[in-house]
Length: 441
Image (tube, rainbow, N blue to C red; front, side, top):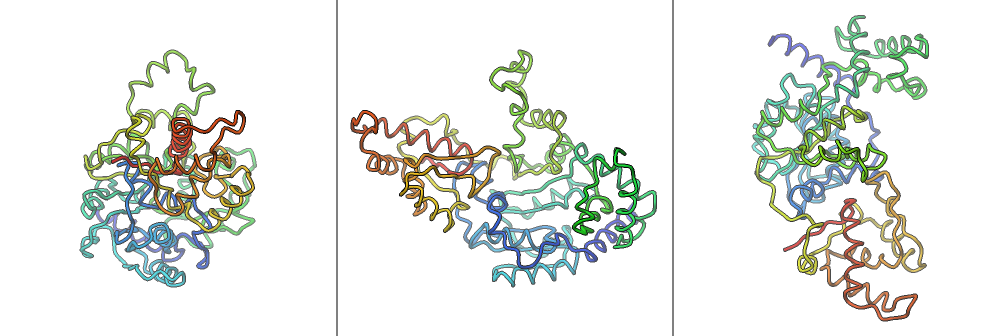
């Protein structure tokens, strides 16, 4: 068994030496992809777990399995002032990772050719660990998570993921086909990728495997890496939500949230979430988060990755959800704009809409849900002040009163309670989407 595992490890290393992943061009900057920065910003999961905002300055972040370094660059861009440590088993990938961060002027980063089992050699403790797209390659995912946990700060957070055995079922069938054909006996290269392409194009269009796995872009864009990562991926395995929670339990780690948690809402699968069949309406009140995720996975298996955040057990701060705050808690609250909205373009567009009285299209700057988020210009003064720095709730209320001193219909002066309730509703809406972060003393 040990020899078999070692042989597979060598094949995986050779595959990534031959075709470092991802093949994102060196000059591409993640600043063009704010939603990607959002999920890689430590502020995001830390707030989800603790309802507190932290400063990423001087935090130490591990990119475990950094590959060609694109995610390391994303982590550096999303977490200003943090130190990035990248490790990978592929020497060629590490060379590219170093080149990438040097090209973009990132100095506070180190890269090492190391296995996960050798990670303690670096003598670092990490505030955030990004273990993206590699956990499913380990023979024992619980053991791999335990290793990550051993170098995690007490209040640190791990982001990792597993391939879905349900969503990717047809790709696993394809991998078995090409394994039977002998294409995975060694280190697949361009010849093997070409054989895959010729095979899939030769199949009739109504053949199930072709219908569910093949995309013409593999041919049009000469996407050999897509073929390697889907049809010729050494060591690829699939898991379920139940497997994920079992692994977390065995590693003594606490589930925090799915990374794309809004897209795992079971109620959103129903035509009328507020008018469920009686059985479902009664049952859903009592089931756990794990069971809800399992049901979603079985009913609507659309996610390739089971992408999750976790951490040491019982380290999350106890807090009252903002939806349950008292008036006094609201009045003493501090409001933060999510860091990924603090861009020159966001400020420019915000000021233009405020001055011209136009609707502000928020989702254009950061897409977090599948619905358009459009804001009335009367509330934009609150966001403008938040661009400067976090603000007390009551300061924003006063700012809004100055901007709208009278009711535009009745011309009656805006009173304190009316202003407070309107601003509170506005902040609550944007907090629920993830654009604002609210702290109470």
